[in-house]
Length: 127
Image 1 (cartoon, helix red, strand yellow):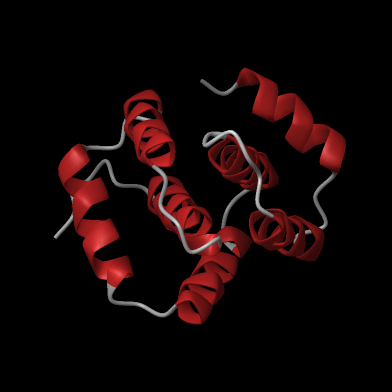
Image 2: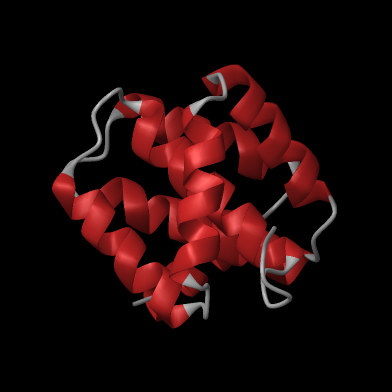
């Protein structure tokens, strides 16, 4: 179904991307543009990205959050920090970070026991 290059990290990043863009109930065009840049930077094939997004569109937000948490737990701490940093950049990409986006990000990074300073440092290196 997916290409061989669609690793667990890349799939989890797509889940995290979709989870954040729907968190506030509004998918902003700037968030969509950020997603296009993200898949190029992370080497995600557009076809894989589009297929995963289509699947996620038919999935409840609660289930997406559970999928994301489960997938994140299987990644290294470095990959977890990178995904949380991306989530933060996505939330900022429309010019306004909605409280629901921030609480979604905080819930995940706190559950994973990640350090905010590591996330901020990583965020500065993204796109």
